[in-house]
Image (cartoon, rainbow, N blue to C red; front, side, top):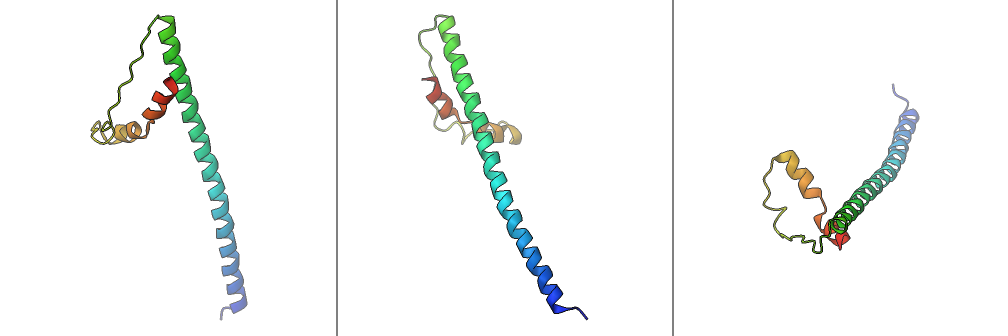
Length: 98
């Protein structure tokens, strides 16, 4: 026969572990998202700076950046490439360049 108090203690311990694990996972996810966001922002700032410096060094007076509102909706370059392309924040790059 199973001792009921030991079973309840086991369930209670398991629930507590799951609660602590969920809290830690949430913190970890937030830190990971923040880290990725900072890396993307850094890359965009460096790319925009590179474009502007290239224009200055080569005496290019006008930098033309196009705008195509449907560029991400109607793209078909393969499953993996679509995922990577659609995630890229083109608007942020345009904003940083000017």
